[in-house]
Length: 453
Image 1 (cartoon, helix red, strand yellow):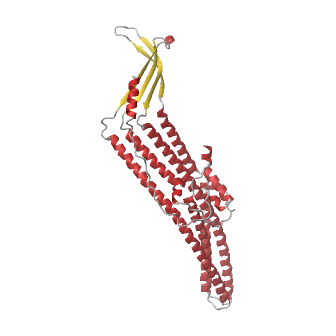
Image 2: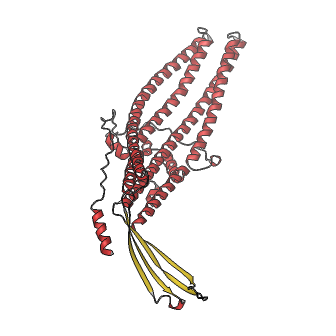
Image 3: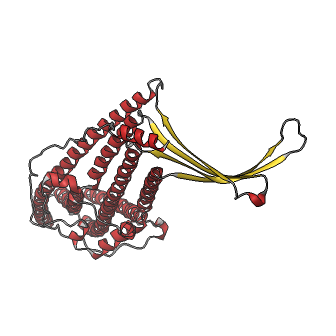
């Protein structure tokens, strides 16, 4: 029997099906349009040189609940790999029992006691089991990369929310200053109205501007509270338990980072590595489906103790060894359909990976272009604000001297205050664009969970 099994194993091993090597579609792009002088660290938020942001990101990476859930998903995937690897080893079961025998024509009954071990083992002739293990390994690696991409998302959201929060504080301070200015002007023109130097409609117009700035104050106060709540949730805390995030400085824009080569970006970004590992997992699942069409060879061994008396149970024993060959013949096209399905899934994953690479290139190029144009916009806004301030000041002087109507002063003041608010928003948008660029360029960074694994 043993010689027969070994002979079959050697014969079939020489016929193991070969799977064509996987070639993922990777576009060959030119270099990115811009290049900075500073190398980008994986922990990109350190570029802002903001200790408070550093601590917030570290807390978020450790306590964010979505990220914690993604890590548990990875641990489950690792357990599945261990489960699939166990099929490479024999399965051994212990059994024990008692049977009641009654010979024909005999009214007495005999008890038969038995115990022993049973083992079974599938010879992985075609590599079917190994293909399944490899598929789960690549799936687990994809889930790890997904966790790393989620960590990148959490760090970016915390950074954006933190600087939005600081900007909201600045906006609230600015609108309070504008309210004070508008209140002072209302008092001034009311005094001039009493002297017959101004019309009543001018007072009404100034009061309209005052009420509009008060309305904006309510909007900024609401936005500030919502941002604090969002930051608390990102840190894994209830919004009602949030601390007062009022300290902090909006940083200047750091130097533009080195963008590197596009193909380096493919190897660096965790979301692209996730997509590629999904391709590899689909390829191994197709290999598993192909190899499932070939015969299964298994070995079975049983060792058994039998006795009519418990005291003599371990004195008599028998064993058996068997080899089985099971080959699929008629399955109604089920196995071939599964091969076609897994091949289509693999091709789908290939196209999805190629699309993810293109989107990654697009994100970098968009961020580079947006930053360049946002800097230009800020320069224009600064010039506009400077001119508007000078215009408002000059019109105020002319109005006091009776040379200009108050409507001109009011319009100039309104434009100046709008431009002041736009400047704050534009600076915040520039930081958001830079954070987007960092996120598009940065690779995976090791979290505390990975370090403890």
